[in-house]
Length: 457
Ligand SMILES: Cc1cc2nc3c(=O)[nH]c(=O)nc-3n(C[C@H](O)[C@H](O)[C@H](O)COP(=O)(O)OP(=O)(O)OC[C@H]3O[C@@H](n4cnc5c(N)ncnc54)[C@H](O)[C@@H]3O)c2cc1C
Image 1 (cartoon, rainbow, N blue to C red):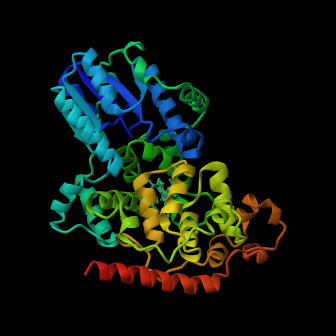
Image 2 (cartoon, rainbow, N blue to C red):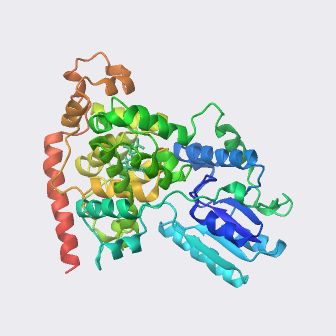
């Protein structure tokens, strides 16, 4: 018998390791262990936790509809494995790997525990379009790509030649075993989590990730290139939350977009999928990716204005509108993520990891690697980041990408009466002078990066 641990792959089709599980010709326990280190009661109430739990509910429904069994437990995965190994004739443990430091440590503990129990482990990475090792080999590189454009050019070639089609095995090709609740009692989900799952359960009328993708490709993709940054138009796919939780597989997403007629708007969307792979690639290849906060001297920075930013009280309309949308809905368009992140880290000189942590709770589509990538880019750190002297002016950004101010009017109704010109301008209570702040930011980031260079000499 095998045990399959669901991770950020909350679906039942196109699972890389399901093909391998089928070839074992044995029954299996399918389990999703919700980990207290990642999901506590507070997190479950935030947009990021709620969206995740909604996908968990959907997964439960998928198992029920297929007349298959899924165990949902709450605890430490290695402890759950020990319990299962003591009660079932297990031979194999299988799961898809994740790339964050916590996940790697957790996976290693699980592998060690499996070994101690005499079990074989099968793992693989499921959520990237390229396989990083094969890709570097194909590109003939002994050093990783550090700049997006050459990475992207090679990535396109690799995808053209070797894009992996969706996997054929689905849940119905496997035989899942029912685990009695009394066996798993020590790891049963607490009441608050049970309630949270009930309250986030998606209704049948709600769009399935597949349908949402098809609608986007049919209706919005042709306007994507033109409308991507026009955040007032809402012309992007809004697929990120489904892709990040694995509610839809990235191979299926790619296959469907690649089947569209060739055009610049298709390329433009595929390019975003390449950005996603580029950040995941960095998480694998850049040894500093998860530790920039420890590598720099942040003494010239402060958190004085953090609460104004988080509470949407900076007096800069586009910043306050975007932060209001985030707080109320868990969503924020990509351009405004860049603008608000740069505003916090540059104009307000707050270390990036404070903003990163805030987005972690609030973003419904939160993903550790991609969120970190966005924050590193905005604060001029990491591979191929914005240059240190790039300081986006939120007023100019607002005037350029939403000239009529419709987005600000939607999220800040208290200033909706202002003219198209006035609506973008800093309010009387603005906490910062944008000109001064820009000069200060360039000085401070130049110093930060210089100090770091000297340290590394
Ligand atoms: C500070 C900051 C924080 C971010 N945090 C996250 C996060 O936690 N989770 C997350 O999924 N994305 C994050 N992003 C990237 C990007 O903002 C979102 O992926 C995008 O807004 C999702 O909307 P969409 O699905 O409509 O994207 P679309 O424009 O339709 O793009 C299609 C897909 O491509 C990928 N993608 C698009 N833009 C990017 C990008 N800039 N970087 C990497 N992948 C991209 C996503 O998977 C997205 O679903 C962050 C960006 C910044 C600047």
